[in-house]
Image (cartoon, rainbow, N blue to C red; front, top):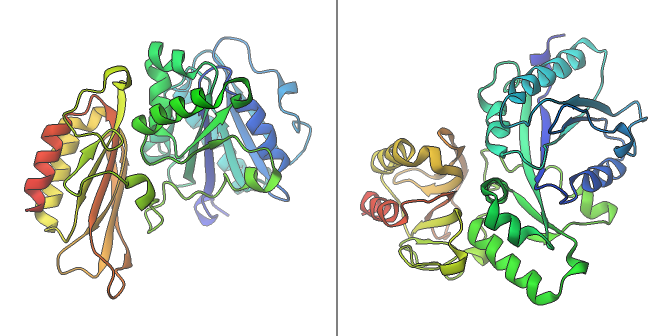
Length: 345
């Protein structure tokens, strides 16, 4: 049996700055996995491999730990990571290793971008794995300082499909609310919740389908509240407004058009956007109402890697609108918004 004959392996990436609690969450995910057989890939910054004792279920034969060393996932280790993933898939296909999903814990110093890209561009990986979601843990005690001082901390927040707050019991409510507001300005589309401890809630972090091109896009009207239909940036503030202390390196831009758009014109807009801003666009997702098409056009991407597909049909009486959410570094929000409006007019 070849690896292509098997269903793709769902992958969950655990991200977050040093000390945020990734290994604790990993242990909880393993404990709540039930009968699922899990392979674990760990990356550790530095020459010394991880302490296997940190993985509480590391003696479970259903769990395979691959230790990576001599660098972080975002640079020299990326090739090693891809080879390790391909090897795991080969062993699964050959019947020498059985597992149902994979958990990948990155080092706290890693930018998630090259990790996510590996599942779309690296031969031997993209056809045998499917990226399900990125969970980013945020240390409520130290996150403010980390975001101020480390660009990668903001990138980790920007890439997240779920933002999980840890150590909230060590700070007061006002500080948690302040941090939550800042995180929402950076990443408008990721739900922000305390890192769960209950088995059912922990298990719910898997199967997010966050990278699947289908109708599950999480463009929830609740988090879009406050955005004008014409397009707004950074959590509802006008696109050109100064943000003062909230002027983070990474921020969100939401573009909305209440109605259908022309496929050629919106396609040209997206192509130009990728050409001019692709390097700075960490994550983006969109649902488009295309003229003369009964289905929603779904697209998403990481930097310049993007994909399109048609989802479910618009229901009778349903308001058709086009929404794009972009998370990136120093986005040219005014120029992007103007180009979007011109493409929709």
